[in-house]
Length: 125
Image 1 (spheres, rainbow, N blue to C red):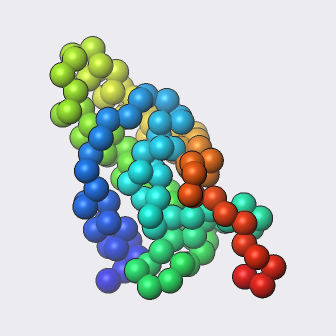
Image 2 (image 1 turned 30 degrees about the vertical axis):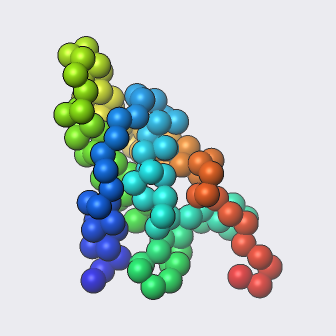
């Protein structure tokens, strides 16, 4: 199984829940859906992804960006849980806005501040 297949399998097992429509909420979404398989090393300024066996550095942020794109799709799935018509419209608009380059990067940056995501590696790591 590839790392990407593993990541997709992991997100499919998570329950969909509704978050707000802002960059902080998108960071929380990323942490909620993938926090158990992503970590950010503050001292290395690098993302790490659990591949089912060990932590691997996400060189070029390939996997974290792909996970962020999955989160955007999941924002659209949140709409099914919303009863209010105006809130649904706002949510769909936010999902579309979140797909921009800047919003994807904002989501990834905001996820770094979520408890349990960031760590500092030891000198021998």
